[in-house]
Length: 478
Image (cartoon, rainbow, N blue to C red; front, top):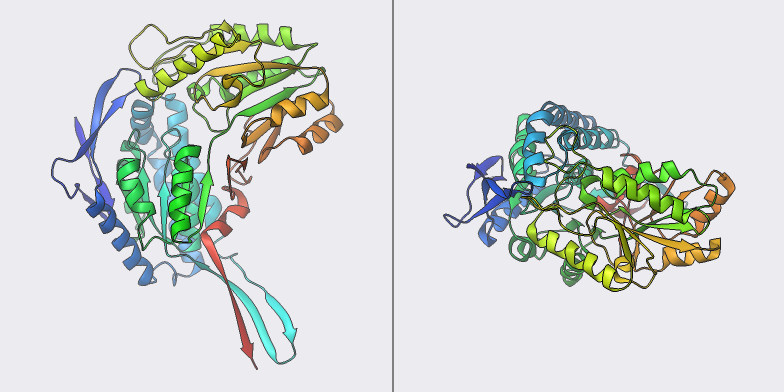
């Protein structure tokens, strides 16, 4: 079983406590595929110290913007070159489809390319005060930025925040998810090293959230935090940030709804569902976990969705033809089982799936629930599994009410052939992004983030980089 290490100050190192390791399993086979050093407080301190020293040396801050951009493009090249090797590791530790695992490295490269183009466009402005004062603003990095990375998209989401942080001039400490740390600690770290990033600017450690995660987010020398994950953990991190009055970028959970109008192309809904709720086994923050269908088309749509769910091939992410991959762990599988049981006990009808798959690995059937009522737990709480709830509405006002009646507001969708209805509905839905006639229509360039308890601030797009910068005003008496 291969052993992986932390990447601190340009070197691969073991945990400060000898023998302190985390074993990583393949969720499709339940077999151990590697182990990695587990960070303790001394490791966190070492990583933050390296980041702080690199920041104070101003090696990145004083680097000409175009040179910084060139360095970021070198990282992008290394990530693309490593996509095949890294994809195999990510597929095994996460369970996702091999092509999707390989694409994460391509996607990560796209982030570094995109934000490399903004390094020389971080501009302040002059402010007219009076004739004998010159007043202007500049943007500066925070210093040490701490990033807590989720397990569902560990490469893409690391690059999403790290590319911004780096472009802005911060030094960064990354804590990988303990369930999926291998591709990050090895392939991603190697890409950074091969690109020639000066030591200490990017440090990668692995550890548990209640250990290394808490030590990192509460560290006195951390000046800014980026986190993607659950609402519960996000609130803990926000509390730690509030204790020291430092900013945080948080992208939390979702319970996103697709409103299906009477004139919608139902096949577009079904095609979206394949990737948006059954892809990645539904372990997507912005998954299309609710479909709110007009009563005139609901039954027909349920039949189509049920047929889709029953047709999906279950298997390992590396197997040709696999549609439905495993969830990440036995704990997550049991959680999904409990939600499914709750839905059926509340009166919802599992027209497809509804239980774990009878085979080795953490597989849950592609599940479609009909007769779901808005107040049911399966319609309110984030399940993070391949479970779709279908609800019915009579008029648009009711559709909006049902869609917005959760504590979340990460994404939403509308399916209709009427552009006027689409824009009207989109303006009424609570969500940081609204998709029309498809799901996941965004790109690296489109801002992403939530309303309500789905978080705040924005990742992706030009808006994101401002979250990694602080504004300074300078006034000069002439």
